[in-house]
Figure 1 (cartoon, rainbow, N blue to C red):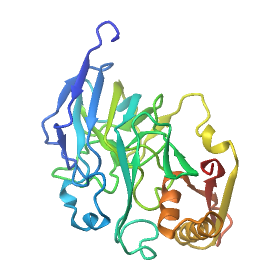
Figure 2: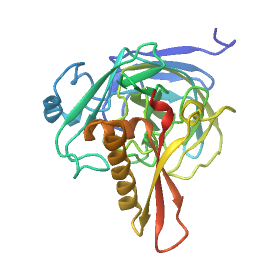
Figure 3: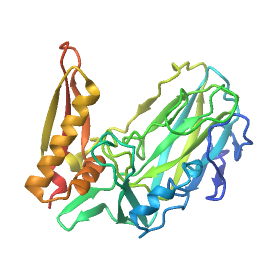
Figure 4: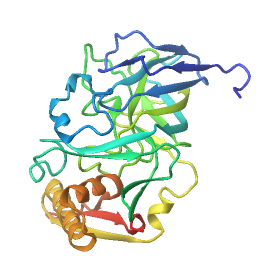
Length: 317
């Protein structure tokens, strides 16, 4: 039930845009404190259908990726303010997919061929990669951001100074996201929803899926967040209790190049999954993207730094 004086708004699935553009007409204009209900398609905008062969990935129209719900114009939001976005609910659709896309991902050179896996979602609590491997469902929006003060159209990938394609998996229900405001009304949009993803999204996809979600908006006057940054406040609960439950298998890559260290940590994790759990290299890479976490273990012991990759053992039944 809405609070007294607070309105609820809906942005349906057929109301979306593909680019950041501060000249777009708002999908809704709301007051601070109002709630907006979104319904978004998966990231290919319906180009990929459940069961399509991997070859379909090679014919995707990249100009029709990232259908974002919005923009939301929040009255009273002015440049220099901060937009508070409270994530109320996130409900994945009935299915999702994860793929290896040629020339994309942390290990693009290692995996040149397209590959795709489909998952049944709905009301399930986990997605089945194999009968004995289950990935906890923890939905979030991969893209949440505001239009910037730069004119014209701007791609959703990569992130912008207004956030956007941030793929931060802890932006789950109960979290508050804080974004800098660059244009009047904030002009917030969201989409690119994931049913699950590990920190790093190493193969460049999470479990991409349609999603319905509800957000509440407020304005912090004069909050002055630095461009190219965002803050978020999580609820007072463990961030990943199901992942922590059985411990982790971790691999650390050492050397002077953080990116190469990350690649080597994931490569060695894939080799372990193939040898110890009988996965194909492709499925092992997908599991790393959906359930594993990349973390900087140390960045101060020059000239060699450490990047670790953690695979939760709880995914193995």
